[in-house]
Length: 195
Image 1: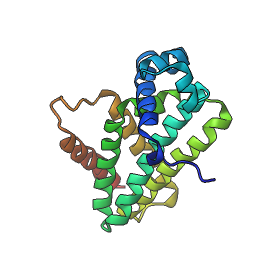
Image 2: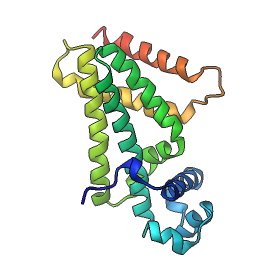
Image 3: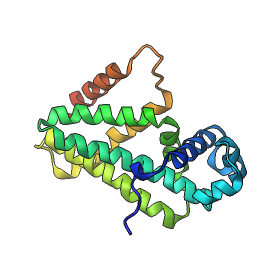
Image 4: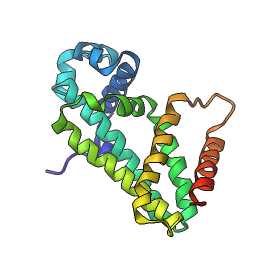
């Protein structure tokens, strides 16, 4: 049976995942209990167990959905755009937008994956690797003359910068989202294209 993709979850499951992400972001994954999660999403503990048997299962589903949503959006933009620079700019916009839309899930993904058992981490690490591979391929299109061994480190630099932007960036601040995406693209490309 194929696994459920991010967009296959029903509304109640999404509410549970969003509520749990807000709770984990506020008090930390290790401190939250299934009772806390049930209260946060306005459900009974038994109803919560109907959807997720354990807190680890819930965290896994949350992180899997977050990563799959990002990958799906990145792949779609790659198919729709042929110019490498346009793809790069779209990549920045999508990454920033998806992180902002799922801000709490994004922060949980950065901070809490390590709390899952190693066996549960492995498929999520594979999705993270897929994000990095998409990024490295994108960068190879923008600057095809580099030594092939350099694309992964540059992908790690870019994704790291994008991930941590979410920890400080506020849409209500002086830099609006579109301007932020433009500045990130310019900042990165000016250094990357000199290479």
